[in-house]
Image (cartoon, rainbow, N blue to C red):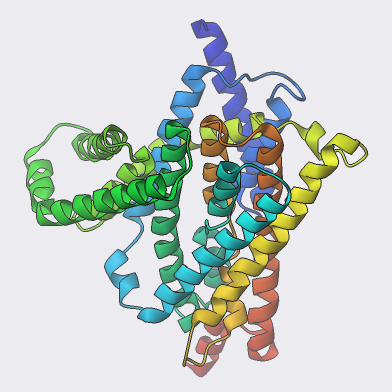
Length: 400
């Protein structure tokens, strides 16, 4: 691909992602859905303006690594662990229930064992950003329910990334066995724990190094290099690079420069991440969603079945809170959104040839439904609980 074509692709990606992302935001939805639709629009199935070339795919993979690095930076793991066992139980149920139900549905619809395992793993994802935004708007982010949701979602992210690493490992080995699954999962956990242990022990070295550098961009350059380095090491030991980037974020979140790194990494993330999500949409062929084509009905049946179990599996997790006076429906609904995390799973699965375009389309339907519904349900549940439909912020003002 020559430079002219490459520049044209980037221009189309950025304009379409920004325009449709803005439209989605003004409609009260995550901008990532607009970026997904932008990919469908400019991709080969409709306008044909963008092709998923190798260089664009690599840039998208860098983007998703930076996204997970940013998620790690924003995750105060120690604070969430103090929430208590409730968040841990909610997270475990929120992973186990969707995984098992998704695996059963995929198996009943005659998908291969590897595809069934991957689809089950995809349903374990939780995108806390959507629920956190609704909880914040209603003044409930610091409530007991909000704290449990945030803590469980962070643990969900860690468990989900381990599962994703297992899936990539299975795709590379070409075989499915409990021995392979256990070895890959164990390797991912060992890598994450080792990186966290050594990183936390020597985090002071990072502070010392950055404090001694005076040139422009030193902080963000060192932070990015560290994230890419752990991603490279993860790839070398056959663990998904996403885990390396996520671990780097968790480590640097313990340094004195956390706030500055977050502030300066966001513009870089905003450059690369839209490429990934637009390419996720580019890979979707809308013709698979045509219900009048008999060949597509199996895809729609799969999407419908997975949507049901994806919601039920997360609602069940709300009942993992034992002995506390909380609204378990709020917690369950708060764990439902898949958002960008589900899209990451889908994109990685398609790129690793674990799933076909048909299953990919079904998963995207699940992601969209589980992203749209929870904000509406959360608002109804929380406003119903708040006297006279007043937010906590309004009632606090009246008390003063």
